Length: 74
Image (cartoon, rainbow, N blue to C red; front, side, top):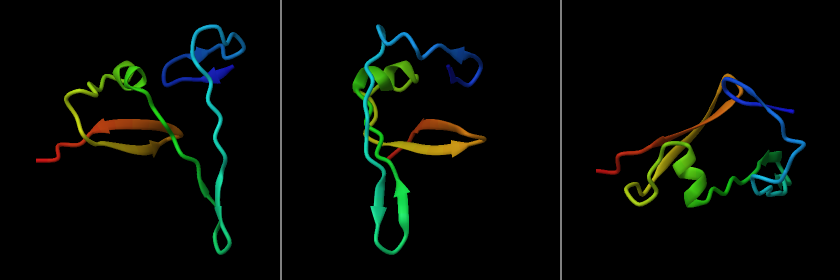
């Protein structure tokens, strides 16, 4: 079961959402540096971001949650 911002999400039933896997990026000097995150237009829309209206988003982690915010590039 995965934890969501305000609920627990049953992740044992994979009939709904597509699952993606990625490799941890590593460097020789720093070791593990992170993982890439790829979001489809539909994923962005589910987060309240209109992909047709925005060119850039900010991604940050706060209190264990990944947050996506539109960036005003003007």
